Image: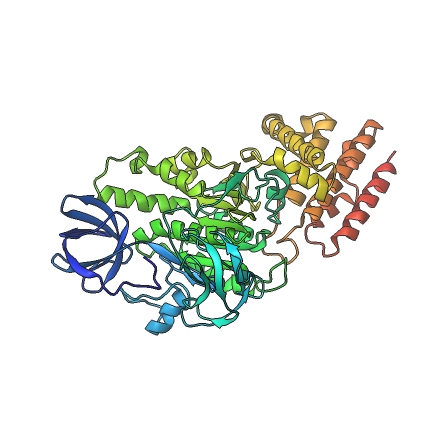
Amino acid sequence: MSQAEQTETVDEDGVIESVSGPVVTATDLDARMNDVVYVGDEGLMGEVIEIEGNLTTIQVYEETSGVGPGEPVENTGEPLSVDLGPGMLDSIYDGVQRPLDVLEEKMGTAFLDRGVDAPGIDLEKQWEFTPEVEEGDTVEPGDVVGVVPETVTIDHKVMVPPDYEGGEVTAIESGEFTVEETVVELSSGEEIQMRQEWPVREARPAGEKETPDEPLVTGQRVQDGLFPLAKGGTAAIPGPFGSGKTVTQQQLAKWSDADIVVYIGCGERGNEMTEVIEDFPELPDPQTGNPLMARTCLIANTSNMPVAARESCIYTGITIAEYYRDMGYDVALMADSTSRWAEAMREISSRLEEMPGEEGYPAYLAAALSEFYERAGKFQLINGDEGSISVVGAVSPPGGDFSEPVTQNTLRIVKTFWALDADLAERRHFPSINWNESYSLYKDQLDPWWESNVAGDWSDVRQWAVDVLDEEDELQEIVQLVGKDALPEDQQLTLEVARYLREAWLQQNALHDVDTYCEPEKTYRMLEAIKTFNDEAFEALEAGVPVEEIQDVDAAPQLNRMGTAEDWEAFIDEIESDLTEQLRALY
C-alpha cells in the first residue's frame, strides 16, 4: 500500500500470536498474500508473506522489540506500493519509500521512532502543469497528457496510468495543481492526477523488449574501453571487502550518461551512504552543469535498519526506475549490494523454517535474482516511445569467493562482469577491475556505435590493448621464474607497453577533479597515444636500438600524466609528436 493514502477503514481483525525478529505470526487475520498490515499497538508496517489456515505470517519493516502476543494487527487490503509522481527526484527514501528528510523534520531528530510515517511524495505542494493534449484527443494507457518541470534538469511527464482504459479527453486544465487534484478527465469517466500508485512486486507493463545498441557511457576507461555496458543492459560488480565496489558504483551513478539515476544503498554501512548523501547534492552534472541530485533518487537502507526492509528496497527502486522509463528516459539503477538483499531473504526464509538451499540461501534465490534483473532492458514502450533501465548490482562474496551462490547465480543472468581484485586494490590500482577475469557480452553489438561516434578503428585499437594485456599475463609467469632481464628484448618491450596500459590508461583517480571522468574521445586518444609508443618503439627495436634506450626516452613517462591533464587534446598531441621524434632519433 502507498504511504500517501492510508486506508482509514481498516479493521483490527487480527491478533499477534508470536514474534521472531522481523517475522510475526497472527491469527484471525482476513488477508491475502502481499497485503500491507500494521502490526502491534504502535502500528509497525509489515507485509503478508505466508498464509496457512488461520495463521498469517508477516515480515515487519521496522524493529519489533517490545511487540508481544495479543496485540492487534490491522489489514489495509492493499499490496506494498509506491507513490509515483513529481517530487521523487532530489529525494532520499528508506526501503519502503518514506522520505527521510520529512521524517527527520516530523520527529525533530535523526533517530526515528517506530510507526512514524509520511507520504512518498509531497501531497500539498503545487506543480505547474502544462497540457500536451487537447479536448477531443483520444489517449491510451501510457500516453503523455502533460508535463511538469520536476527539477531544473528533468521534465516530469504525466501519463495515463497503465491500468486505465483510456478514451477521449473531455476536460483538461493548465495551471498549478497538487498531485492529488484531477488534471484530465476522460470520456470513460476516469480521472487522471499527477500521482500514480504501483505495486512494487509487479513489473510495470512495457511494449516490446529490444536489443540494446547504445552504450551507457560511464566515464571510466576500463569499463568504457574494455568492458562496456549497454543502455538497457545488466552488470555485476563482485569483489571482496575493501576492493572498491561502493566507490565504483558511486562513480557510475555520478558520471554515467543516463537521464535518471536511482541509487539503492541496500544494507551497506551508514558511513558509505553518508558520503553519497553529502557528495551528490554538491556535485555538478557533467551533462548539464546543474546539481547531480536534480536527476537522482536515493534509497538509503543501511545495515543497521531492519533486515526485512532490505528485501523491499530493491523492488522500490526498480519500480521508480520503471516509472521514469515509461516517460521515455534512460535510467541507470545502482544496487549496492544484492548480497545484503540475498542475506535478508535468507534470514526471513530461515525464520519461516523453509527448506534451505546452498549455504542456507532460500531455494528460490536464483528465481528472485532473475525477476529483479529481467526488469532491466531497452523497451519499445506502449505509447510508442523508447526507454531503458540499466541495472548494475554490486555483489559482496564472503572472503572474495566468487563460487558462492549469489555471485554464481548473478553471473548466469548478467551480461557484463566487472570482477574486482583484492590484489589490485592492495597495490592501489583503482578501479581494481581485473581485466583478465572480467568480460562484456555487449561488445559486438556496441562496436558500431563506438566506431561511428568516437573513432572508426575503436574495436581494432581495443583488441590490440586486450592482446597486449593477455601476452603480459602469460609472460609474468616466466618473469616470476627467471626475471625480466632473461626475456628477449621484444618481450621486454611488450611488458613496458603493458605497464603503460595499466598505469596510464586502466588506472583512474576517482578523487582527482580531472581524472574522475574521462569522455570516450579522451579514452580513445589516450589508448591511441600508448599504441603510438608501441608502434614507434618496435620500429626502433627492429632498427637495432637496444630496449634500454627505448625505455629511457624522455617522452614516455609523460604518458602517465594524460589522465590528469586539463587540456588533454593538446597534451596528447604533444606526447605523440615527442615520442615519434625521440624514438626515430635513436636510429
